[in-house]
Length: 286
Ligand SMILES: [Fe+2]
Ligand SMILES: [Fe+2]
Image (tube, rainbow, N blue to C red; front, side, top):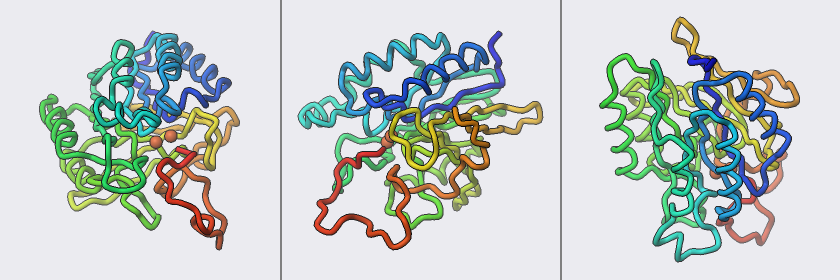
């Protein structure tokens, strides 16, 4: 029987560089634990290739569970800039037949907020961007929900960096987070940084809980492959467990700050980039 209090939060599978043993394990967990939904917060593919999306569709279909997917920066065309400009979401739209757009579960709604854009006026297009239109759409969906419904907003990029010298990981993220705080949502679920976290972030409108899932790809940062198990307790609390194949306890899995990207942490004194390095347009580990 489906467990209506249980959600699986997965992220950054990066088909093309997926971790097969981890994916087999997650599929087995879905089959045996029967969560109400599987929420995937972006970077389904490595380079938005057709064969990578086909592998993603096949795996999602094999789960036999309701699945939502956010678009990640790796899911937009990387090699074909003409397609990226004119129809950046064409291949991602191919996922529509196997996933839910929004999910209205008993007591809880999952509402997407897009954090990718086709172009950015900065060198690093891997970072997030919340457009006015994307935020308005998300807020309108939340405002139309019946009162008392718990809301989980799903994004790919964390809306703000925490505890690090921020470099505007997500443009418009601070404003979006404040608007979500005003609506007293339960949490923002994100991916992109490849390590799990669960923290409260202050905004001008009060605190918001930010929950990040790690990666199920070969591109690990500082923790092994993992996904988050979210459980809605009878008292209304949302509990997070960062499940992983190595049985590392959740407390040891969670990172304490949200970095600007998924690059491995630098050793003290190590330079930010090698001397003479060109600015990255697509960091290898995201
Ligand atoms: Fe990403
Ligand atoms: Fe990623």
